Image (cartoon, rainbow, N blue to C red; front, side, top):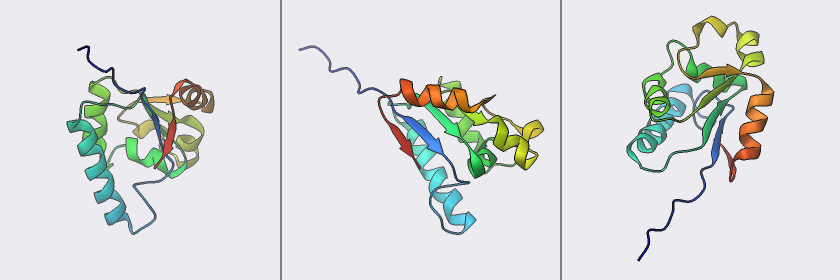
Length: 118
């Protein structure tokens, strides 16, 4: 019996510095758990896109930088919004992924099977 191919991969959007709208410690704890499970699994997203406060996740001092680097090393593109990084003065602190424009995020969304905002 032939193997069933994996489902098409979604793009994950990160508009926040963590998961949800709780205090920072809880948002970061939940995101570490989520990304840790993603790193352990065999199904990977098509891309991770970061904008607004979410760009804080890919810069120096991020509480999930190690997990994002693991996903990037497994071939998952990490795309951060250049406008947002510039707005927060974080452009020189990016430690994971690529700095892209909204065009790059839009393209990733349109190529995806679905888009999930976290």
